[in-house]
Length: 330
Image (tube, rainbow, N blue to C red; front, side, top):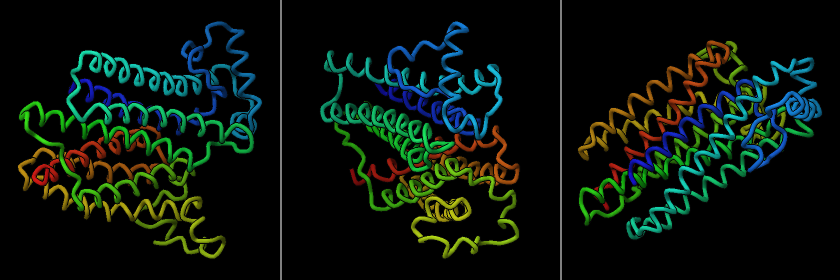
């Protein structure tokens, strides 16, 4: 059961990366309909491809960004969105069918059945958010709504965190039948919130294309703070939909995260979980360096995809550290 949960978690990490590439290549709106069953099979004939392409040419994004696109170009962007949706279906199947099997064989430890069902439901909610995200860009916009993108990504990462936490609890239970689930400490909750804020602004960066605001670091177009945006609209609105301010927050909140995770890593090491501490340091260091490289490269797709991958791995390492720090209290 533990290996099964780790497998599902690894698939979610892969899906996060594919989702990032889908966004970076402007592929997310290439499939304009949600067909849970029939959508499993991609277009196979030229006539079917023409129908899909015709659907895409009706939405505003085609005229604004891809006007004049050839069928070959359409097939390229269709591939990434199709792969993203297919992975979602596969993950749901790989999670649901073994869960049913374990339940029928009464192999789910007491107290874990509801948690696993809740995680499955959360995965379904993430898929629903994905369709709402796509639908937000089909009529009045030329891209998906950034807040829907953030909801879609954060839900996926929260599901990933829940899977890893549950697998760690089950691993402890396998080693000691009297082991109790790890407790979420106050500092662990703080670390989770600080990370969640950074992930939320990372999603907004993608949705608003805020990485293209500047290719400088540590300055932003010769300045530390984009003061020219202040006063143009209420501050609350600017903090979630102004590319310059979102970029600034994501850039500098990262150092708040560094400080908090450094303490978390020390706590995990003090609890005897040195590997969790090392994982946090490595993932965090790579993520900071990749973030800087993405900005300075003008959002190179390969670097941005790596940034997304390491972001998901950072979630895994932080969950590992928070879980380790909660073992004694449990």
